[in-house]
Image 1 (cartoon, helix red, strand yellow):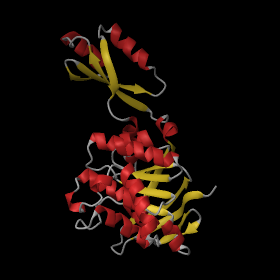
Image 2 (image 1 turned 135 degrees about the vertical axis):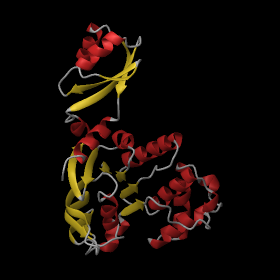
Image 3 (image 1 turned 180 degrees about the vertical axis):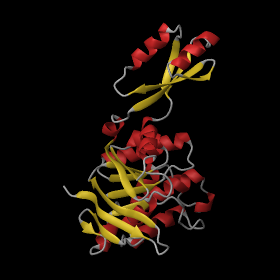
Image 4 (image 1 turned 90 degrees about the vertical axis):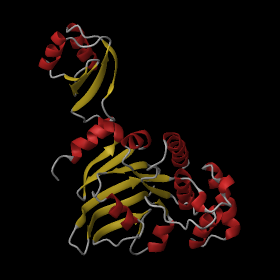
Length: 307
């Protein structure tokens, strides 16, 4: 089975002298749901632009399903569908025309494109809007239209760059369900997102890029297992008294307010032991939760280290 994407020692230096990518090597397996994460300016968009032919690499190699993007450009491009961050279709065209015209760029006849467009527009809840001009669509509908357009040539690899930015929670969950089904049907997906809950929910593997270099990569469950510390929020049965406020401070527990405290639990420590320790201080816990998404804690941990 061919890798969906193979990148070796990829470098990109802009004319300004800025090094956006500093020797990135990465492999995405066919059928994977892969998350590419990183802070703003880390190199994610540059990497995607090179893979999709929108930007030239300085050096290194990139292959999509074994098609080198330099020597087999047309075949590589035909294997990829991309959903960019920004809307880049004409808002004065009808939805159906935006989708079918995109098919034409791949040599797909309109007679073939129309039933295919119907299929994907229905799957993403846009079929009733097919004859409306794009300007009349809501922001969430425009996002879905971008996905339909990227899928019209039925690529084996779909790259989504911040696909749910600005989308409400209900629509985001609907898009998650669609993407899961698409991946289960065999489409390899690469996702970039700043919603780390989204990456944890959807992705099997992730790579974190920072300052033009991959700083962490692997299965999500394995990477989360490396967390040295997790921070938990405890909601209390009764408010803290002045006496047990002083006691919890001695244990390194942070007071959030009279009814809530925050505690860091080291890797290997039992959460139940932490609750028992609080109980011995006459502090009863009503409920508890992670302070932040676990992937967020990992992300902050690896991106704050010098590269």
